[in-house]
Amino acid sequence: MTLNELKIGETAKVVRLNGEGAVKRRIMDMGLTKGTEVTVRKVAPLGDPIELTVRGYELSIRKDEAAKVEVG
Image 1 (tube, rainbow, N blue to C red):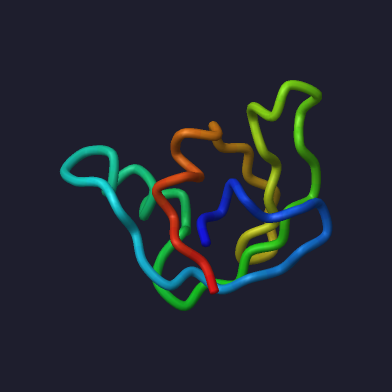
Image 2 (tube, rainbow, N blue to C red):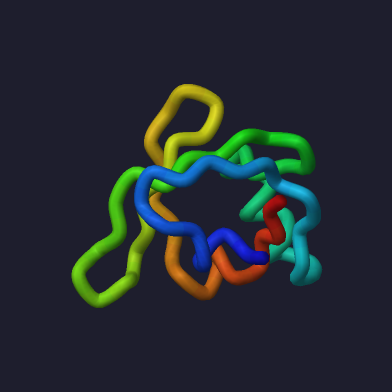
C-alpha cells in the first residue's frame, strides 16, 4: 500500500521509499524516512495535494510523490 491510498485520519508507518536520485532525496528531506509514523490530515477536493502530520508538523505533498512512499 502506498501513502496516497490512505484515507483521511488513517495512520501508517513508512516501510520503503521508491524512486531514485533527487526525487527520493527530496522525500527523505521532508521527513518521510523508513519507520516514520504518518497521519493523513486532509486531502484536497481533486485529491492533490495531500496534507500529512509527520514528526509533529504538517506537510503537504503531491499525489505522485505520495505514490512513491510505501506504508504498512
